[in-house]
Length: 377
Image (cartoon, rainbow, N blue to C red; front, side, top):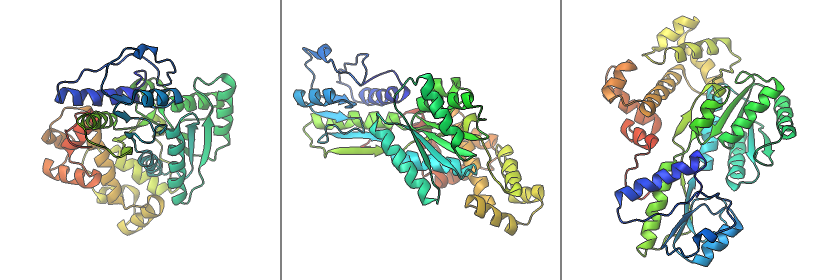
């Protein structure tokens, strides 16, 4: 496994968490590419098992030659008889479409990297979820990493031709960075014309791009933890069924690249801005109605037509986004967090958060920060 990107480092963090909780392991990790073809550095190694991202035929041949218990962390499935764990690409695609739709976007596009099976799957599921909404997504394929100038201009021409405003999902953050650079070349405003969302939440990339890149954060820590647990069970003699165990993403980390309100209805747009500007405190539906000068029934009908939900549901969704952000970025206790966001009781906030996300605030914070609770995935 490589250590050069945020995704792989997250997996290694999950493996480390399992090893700390289960003493007796001795790990060997060297700085190598996951596209390695020369495995002479393993000559003489006397290990008992492997955790690997099997993404080349050479790696697959090595795994088969060693014949050791192995857990695969790649979507390529070059050794299909292995058990493995991987990010749920369908869930990532669904979350991306929802993120763009929540901002009023009705045009969608995907930028993938043809070298990777997970990128192709991610793109297929993105197309599926957009099509289910009645949309017609556009797809672009990056042919290689480290794009040359002419390739960036090809990407820029594709972006120029897209109907706008449009939400573009990049298969991973590096592709997101390429899209932002291509938008600069073409003079396309981000996010007003093109809203961009990456995957992996690589903090370095996300905060160095201009504008900062929004990204979906996969649950790499849990994936790595599960991989180590699976290998431990195999070393103990347990037979595990082949195939990938799919882990859903944690959240969308929204930065400037996707902060757009693309709503044609001016009354709905004004209401959305009012709600989002005041989401740090309690927002009553009656306040929104007074601000836009509408009856509740009339505004609800407009919201359902544009966003598919009522004014109250939108207030709840935005408020829960604020709760999630503070859970992941601060050490505030639940009572402190409730006070800061103007909830009357932390218990009410907790119940509302679990209803919205399926997780208690404590479980959400543990998952986001990589504190994995022991258990079988």
